[in-house]
Image (cartoon, rainbow, N blue to C red; front, top):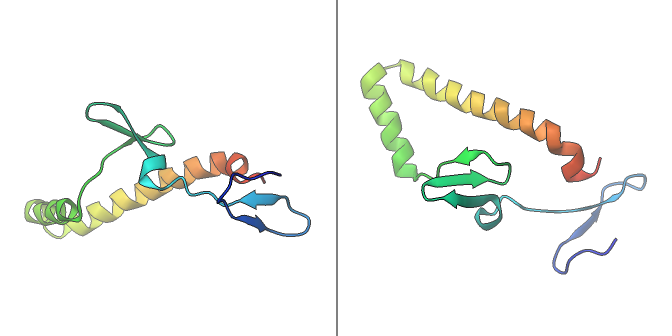
Length: 99
């Protein structure tokens, strides 16, 4: 298989095909502006770019509003995001990695 220049080649195992390491999670490859104010990722999911200060401010404001429940809310948000991410990944795994 001819690979574009600069991409590393790895052999996963003698019975498996060669795989090309890819990093489409670089911001320039992963994010795209569809319209003013609309940012989507490589999987057509709407996305937000925020700073660490924004996240900290959000956490502090949440704690002021709901108290101790803020930790559970943040955990559930992260858990649901991760769950949705793995569902999408499992659907595209074979195509993306050729297995």
